[in-house]
Length: 182
Image (cartoon, rainbow, N blue to C red):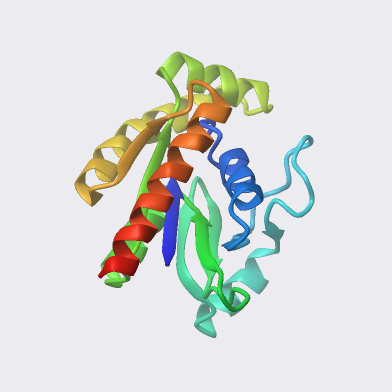
């Protein structure tokens, strides 16, 4: 099973994805690549941080399930290779979710959002984004909400982290049950 968790910057989708893997023994989180610099508070293994040349080489070699350029940086998801018996969890932006959808892959799409745009802006500032970047991501978030609706994503508001993780866990379990029943 393929699960796509997307959402605008600053809504907590990365934290949620990590917690989902802790809650579900059979979930495997794919690690995305990026050409952007690591943020000060960001863990070194949050992404595979590479230079543009290495990323473009991987594109040429067909290593990505999806990839996109966002605010001058490249982001991509390598073709997943989870351990046997594990479902794949992708934590990607909506543009990446659209790419996965265009490939016709059967997946569960969940869109995580902040309670308000003001909350999203506070979270972005809290992680060290510049005011220019905050405004860009807020504007991009408006488009992403519309695109996620078009994709048929299930919306989950991250107003309480534990509640959001529990809600998405329930959605995953329900989807898995439906898949098993055929």
